[in-house]
Image 1 (cartoon, rainbow, N blue to C red):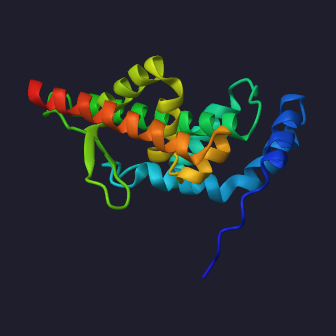
Image 2 (cartoon, rainbow, N blue to C red):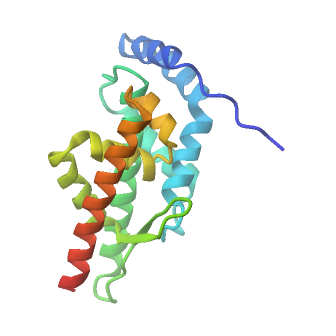
Length: 195
């Protein structure tokens, strides 16, 4: 049985990001090595419950990292980096869903779903493209609530981890998550009524 290595301290991640931003190309490699288990767990969490048979966790992670490697490395700290990885993964999944939908045109529309669930909660299933649009709306309304929701469901982080990443209290994470879930559930219920 292989146990996950403890995540590197926030300071170490921030130092590696700073070194990479200043041109040390080996810093990115060291960073990825130090957080690989966390990134892989994020990818697995993103795929859990989704209809993505042709997209494995390793593929999702690799495509997201390719997107990040071609971006300007301006991440300030661990929170910013993990948020960027989470957004890149979401982007890959949305691109994948759009491609699958385009492939299905003419032969019947196929709904790609993503499951939002956690222990003890009722499962919420939404069309991935609709979910992406709703998350963009929430981002405009309440950026921190959107980030908490994204780090919970897309990155698969626990409440305490999100509090550490965002440098807020667990109570703040809970409050933001309650609001974001209620906001999202209301929008999804309204869309179900319109169908």
